[in-house]
Length: 93
Image 1: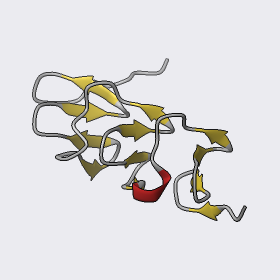
Image 2: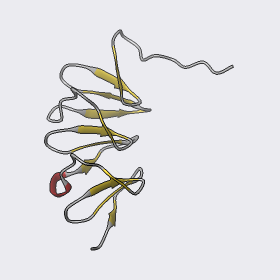
Image 3: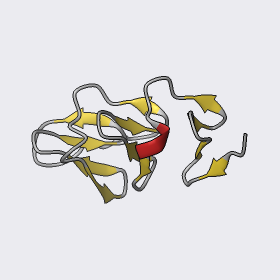
Image 4: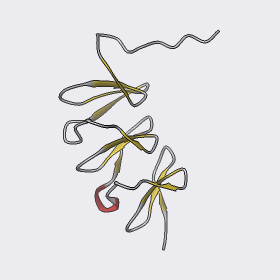
């Protein structure tokens, strides 16, 4: 089976979608779309770095760049839903 490299670590063959060589169980290979910054979707689910984002709306999901994304109901930063006006910041000491 030929495997097609997509982007951001995603790839697929005619039946299966992979992230970093690991099968994504619930992804639809025929309609899988890589967005940006590690985000991807099919008609039913949204993924970040190969992991399904629970509750994300695939029909309205958009990658905004710099790890940010949104759907009709929520905002996301690095695949995690957040509330408030700005995404959480991470401080490293």
